[in-house]
Each structure stands twice: as C-alpha cells, then as structure tokens.
Image (cartoon, rainbow, N blue to C red; front, side, top):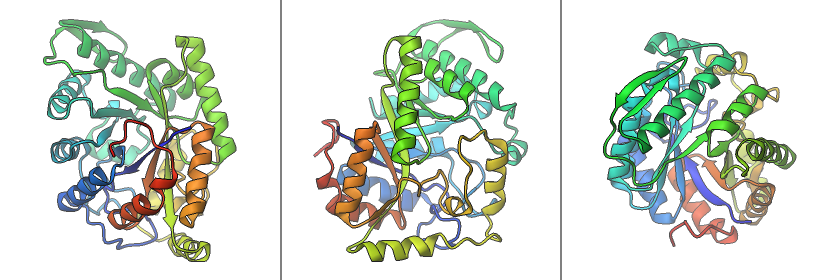
Length: 349
C-alpha cells in the first residue's frame, strides 16, 4: 500500500521540549525556506497547527498564527497541500468558510482542514476562546463542519443549531473542490462524532497494533454511518535517520533526556489533564509531543523505510514527519528514505 510523506510545520520554533535551541526560528523566513524545500523535494502535505501560545518552548516564547501562515505557504509553493488546524471555539464558521474559499482561489485544490477540539484552558482564557466540556467540544465541531460544507455548496445558506445560527448567508466564490476535512480524537464520543462529520482521521503516533485498531474502528463506524470507509488516515511521527542504528539511538537519547523544569512542561500537564486519552503518556513521550516517538521511526534509511511501509500496510495513508532541524532532515529523508517508500500518484515527481 502507498503512503504519502508530509511534515508538521514548526510554528513554535521546533519540536523538542528538552532542547532549547533547535536552529529553527519561529519566523516566516524559516517557514518559507522549509515550505519551498519540501515542495521542491516532493513532500505531499504539511500540517499547520493552530496554537496561540507556544506549548513546546514555553508560553512566553514566540509562535506563529496558523491561518495567515497558511496563506503565505500556499502562495509561495506550487504543489504542497496545506492542512490547517482549526479549533471551533476560536472561530466563526461563516468567516472561516470565506477564508478557506479565498485560500482555495490562491491555490486551487491544495487546502485541507484539521478540526481540533481545544485542550488548553489557559490559552482559551487568554485569547477568549470558548472552552466547553470534552464531549460538548465535539458536538460544536460537528455543527461547525456542517455549516462550512453548507456555505461551500449552497447560496444562500441557513442553519439553526445549538451553537450556530445563520440565515441567508452567502459565501462566494465557492472552493474549486470540497476541502478534505480531517479530525482527531480518542474518546468513544469523539470518534463517533468524527466518523459522522469528517472525511479523514488524524491520530497521535502509535504502534502498528494501535494503528491497526484505530483504522479498523474508524472504518467500521464510517461504514455504519455513511456506507464507506474513512478517506485518509494521517499520523505524526518523529523521524531520526542516520547512517547507523547506533548513531540514530544516540540522537534519540539526546532529545529525550527529560528536564521537568523546561518551559513546555506545564502545558504538557494541562494537555494530559484536559484530554480524554486512550493511553497514558510517559514523560519520555512528552519530549516531542503528539506521541511522535511511539512509531519508533529511528534507525538507518532502510530500517525507517521498512517501518514506514509497515504503517502503510496497517492503514496509514499520510505520515506527518517531525524532525530537527527540519529543513536539513527533510533533505536527508527525501534523498535516503523517499525512494524506498511507494508514493501515491498525487505526489509530484
């Protein structure tokens, strides 16, 4: 089975909570360099996370806003799909529908969404976001996506729900094609809601057995509701490729030496307490976030490629790479790993 290789845009100046300086500035200049490099090398998709505070380097560290950044990435690349995270508690759906339609006019067919249930209470307090109970966030997300799709396909569009009410709203122009809507969640209520409203599912990093179980579960739910499986399955993973396995394991040890006094540790504890997770997070997994080390993509190019192919066989269709420093590592991965992994026809040569 083919698997597309993409990457996670480092809006917060890196990925590592235990390494202060990764030579990855939280700046447009650095993101532009990474984006254009990835586009040239043939990477498929970048996920742009939406966080108004920096959960990797500490809340006082700089970070970039997702939607303005996405517009710039789309305008400065030619083939790269940009999947931008959106938290319904921070957006009006009609305004976002207009934003997405405008982005599609900049880069037709290259816009996707990742609908995220917010987890960070302190961020919501500082920025005025709506922070409801866990299950209510998915009810809100479901309405949010219903409104988006209605505005992208109907003119005028009216809706009356528990969270949103629109009457005769017009969004023109429409997107050239319906953007793919990803979503993620691990609770039973979250998964059932996601199976109803999303096209695609993005999970945290996991083992092969965990991935197979997630894929089977979401496909079964989607088949029962829509009569079809989930369209795409995405997963983030931190990748370390070196000439020898010993070198790769030494790098892994370096980045996972936990410092409980590091600035990002408090946000990790908030994430753990405000999320309904299917697995207990370890402090080692805290080191990079999104359980990116759990897939164990660490080793020689051949070892990492074999492991990626196994995740493709398990049902993952999109791997979102995290690595540090990202531009140099994407070049290494493109040269040494990409030729060993079957790509879909949508990846440009």
